[in-house]
Length: 235
Image: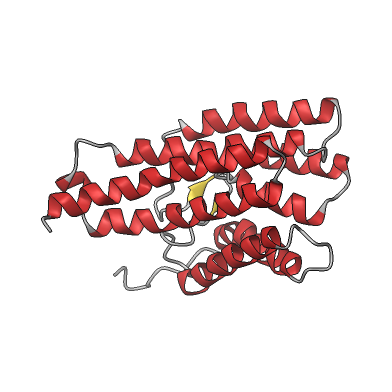
């Protein structure tokens, strides 16, 4: 197989995320929240794999006719923002006006964030909360806090998108990657497990989901607070 064909197949693999987004949306429209999240987890796995594949097969060199970054952003907005926001609104977790505030804040702020050219830091982390609302909303479905707590969380993360707070990329942030990558894989496992058992309140998946989510949220901020010491030789 030629390098060009390999690179093209990476783009096609990325594009499957759009199919999974549609399947998730169809499930959401029918109120099948567990099925919706299962499809979003599948899309999340695709999103985690396609980046390393794109770099390995040099898609910018061998298949430049397709903008992989733009393709990824389109799919990410659907699976990370649009569908989770719809689920939060229609599920009843946020009654009345609180649901309207949440979907307006999430969709509007995330659109601005996705277009911000400063979203990545020098160490390939994110500057500000990276609009991973799929990860936030699935935890809210599992834990089911009071509606005012949900509203506060939504507003806090929306504000955090436009702060200089650092959030790690589990694959691309080199510092602590030996821990961050397994935690991200564990989060994916617990998310799938929680959705599979229909967010049963006694499921151990919820504890794992919360614990791994806390790490992924705060690891970058801790790294920011305690930066690495540079080699005194200047190397």
